[in-house]
Image 1 (cartoon, helix red, strand yellow):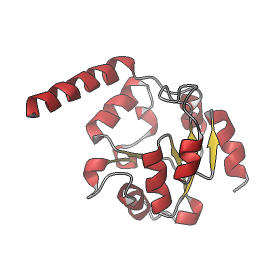
Image 2 (tube, one colour):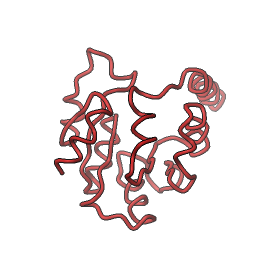
Image 3 (cartoon, helix red, strand yellow):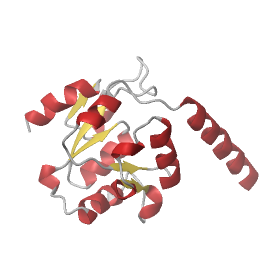
Image 4 (cartoon, helix red, strand yellow):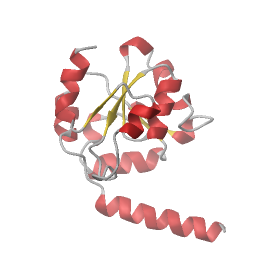
Amino acid sequence: EEKFYDDIMNIASDIYSKELITVKGAFEYVKNSKRKLFIGSNSFKSRILDGLEKVQLKQFFDEDQVFSFDMVQKPKPYPDIYLKVLHKNNLKKEETVIIEDSSVGVKAGVAAGIKVIGLIAGGHWHEDRSEEELINSGAFTVIKEFKYLDSILGTM
């Protein structure tokens, strides 16, 4: 059983390291953003940092801006990771917005009491997968590309 788990994790890591790319508009958004940006992920911190380096985004994130599931007691869909980001950075819930691409992540953000925008730009959002999944999980709106993000944030 442990060998099976290790084999699956090695396969996933191999795919991740070879095939990881940013979604359309993400690099430009992060590069040009004047906002405080943080990452809250259900992945290991080392894997997140490796991924940021692979897609050339590491230059925009200090390690203390990256929060991983192993830094909290309970991973998403529990709100712990987002509550930790708020607490560690003295952020106010009402001034914070979470961008999420999974229903588990949306549920975590909503449980933390933070507005969540769903993003369906990733490769796992194939044309037969409905954005209603994120709306039904509590996202207040859904965008298909990063280029729409500032106009949505400007209305808040």
